[in-house]
Image (tube, rainbow, N blue to C red; front, top):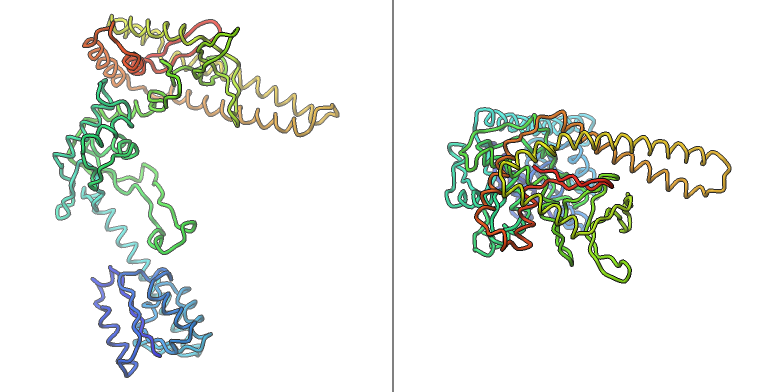
Length: 499
């Protein structure tokens, strides 16, 4: 039986005019009969072999159903020379004749050369089309046009003008999300709380879903577009066209381009740049501000760090002299913990009282906030921490040198034990170096203090509307997290670092 294969991709339909009907009609004419089996891949790229009708044609050839194949052109079979050769070789091995309407395929050196040249030219044309399309999109972006609809919540896309326009209803929700996240309130706590609030109030997502997921809220909070700057050319999608036809483990992932390659286009502003920067600041602390609640609640959950070993200090219930008590400690007993801690402990009641009294004092006397910020600036703390890390790095290097000497000597310590300790010290040194680099970069960089001052100002205004004697545990925790960036506990003192 004769098989007629036809293929048209979306871009080619608009340009070449070789429609599916035309290809089938020409194929039947070449066959001299209407008694043919048609294989029609409408809207599939010729860059890949994974096409439904081509797959069926190959199976029918293997089953002996098809004995002759007619196709308009070699590039209808595939756009890449290698794929064309794979298919023709596969068909010929099963004795199937391949006939092209536009030119004969002969088993001669000349015919092979001609066929290869046509395949190479088709592949070149496809590459040039892709290049022109990419260049055209970049040129449109450089002219201030929005290339395609990104379905950004808060905006609609005007395709004719190539611009984003505000969707008033969605824009109000965007403003609500930023306000709930950056300002003290009793409505929603953190990203999870905002997602639940939007879901409970039956506010639909961009695609009309009833449930808001925390990741969607996070993406909105991180989207710079709302400040009036829409970034384009962010993602490199090269090679992704055929992902839907590939196994999951062979699919090419989308890659983020370097920021200097992004092209920004002006669009209507929904929130101020200042509020956006506030949100980014809070997001940077979100893991600690909105730490996951365990069985017991701790007022300073996610804020306490040991100044001696730099481990975070978490709350736990301990048994001392037959009596249960709660304490903050840097000891890590979980499996796989890189650093076990130096054993710093402090009763929760003691530290909670100290920090709350300080925060209460600051908020009761606004002028104290500025003084406190000057007294315990992050810059000063960074300098102290850098000095501590440098001392710790020196100790770690010395420890490694001693172990290496042991390794080379014939002392009874087991080789595996030495290897394990060397690995732990190497991990510790790497972590210390990374932390040192981060702190040094912060010192060199210019810190935006305006955002911090505004956050404190809004917290103060919110605090003044409350009755201090009626504050709940959650109220105190919320206020502390908006004023205090970190609590550092050393053997001699406690440093409370404000924003």
